Length: 197
Image (cartoon, rainbow, N blue to C red):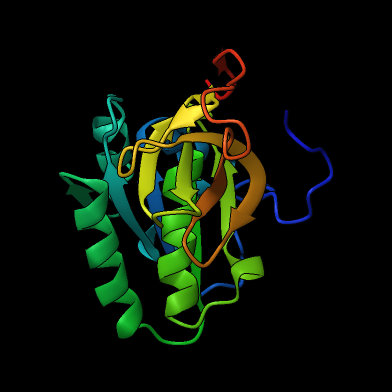
């Protein structure tokens, strides 16, 4: 059902630490914390003194290890809360800040949207996917966003249509596109498959 080679599909190149950045702002969700903890550069006191961590646990137990880095650390109760704080930080940021994001695809997309809204080029945000492959899907019919979609087709949580989840990704809304799969022949829907675990 999925079309390969769609150019809008996000690519995650890893949390490569920029040695020239004056400040490192790292947004982490769940297992994304390991992307930072595994970096040898975290042993460098110069890096740690310029590091600010925004963290959403997301069911993981990495908060203690992140705090042990002795960097500027803040734990958010929800992704929405963390994104609000990220937007405030970026609204007063200066040149030389490098933004990083690690976690699930939906989380990374939302962090990148806040970053690009603040004027950061999406190509300069360093990202690493960790955890579930569940997708954030935008229904092209009602414009509603359905979080944590793991099946294809999936049901829109807003209008109830059965959607084909495409590989087409929109950075503007940080979501994959979902289109009505039975628009031509209502009720003719292929079997549901676990596609994004």
